[in-house]
Length: 420
Image (cartoon, rainbow, N blue to C red; front, side):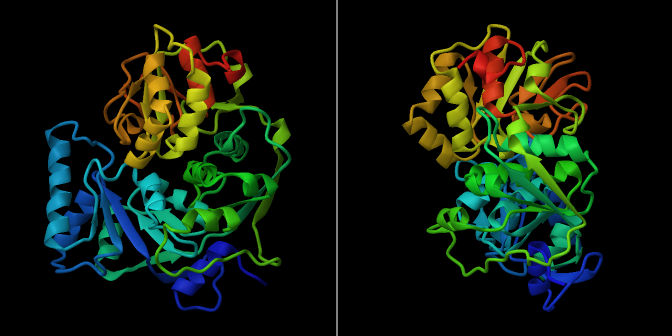
């Protein structure tokens, strides 16, 4: 029998001709990275073990993006620890605030992720990078420390579910809606420790930003990783970015999938995930009566330039509802600069939104958008758990950038067609 993309990558990185689901393999890692929340814990463990050098100074990346720009003294100390460690151990890829941005958007943008890579990140949304055909998964800080020391990690080969998307996307339905709909279908545990392989003609037509969005939320279904087979769109994106050699993998025609799910996308209108789970999805037309206090457009899920363009198109010539705070956060400085050049930032500011520096910030209730008791937000982020964006009695509804922008204008959850 053949192998899936994920199985092929793990086999190649463990020196095996073939692997099968459930098998434990010792895998060589192409990139290990962490942020200002997870890296300090790993650094402390690394030093406790008495290790004198990282396995490869060019294959470790440290990116302060969660509580940055530093929200308080503790956050400043976390970042200082990262900065000193990078200098002491000669880590080439430490990126200061102003030069990086949100790790899961910044790393592909800067060419760190290539097809066929094994990528380990001390962050659950590391699955994002499967959009470029890499096996990419999140780990804990101690595992990250071990990878920094050895360049290897033990992994159990996950079984794969294949998701096939067919048809033509309706107006205002985006990649975010596809993954929300999928999670609503299979549940937050529907792919627990599995690989979610996304395919079909609809996926082939998506830009890299949309593919990153889909793979980003694979973990919200419990998946070990999300992955999309590289194609011309992928290769065009990495051309000029990726400087190293790489290998493109495809699933074999006779690869074994534990399940195959097929969707007709014509039936999917813009989705809204109601609190407190990403799986509590409903069509936007079914939740239009929900009054809101805040809108957040950004994050590693939907902070791409294409996302900002969509939101700006809806907001152009409009004003944010007087009862709503609208916060826009471009995912990286490069995206911010391009949005500035294209007049997108001006549209946001003229509409009454506040545009912040690249940061994870409000997504995890960190800063720059924390909710008070009883407040309700619409966000283009990836999680809406209890207390995710602030007070335990606040609520977060997940949606695509167009829905978020329309909601900001109306003061309630709204379909973009109501505004545009």
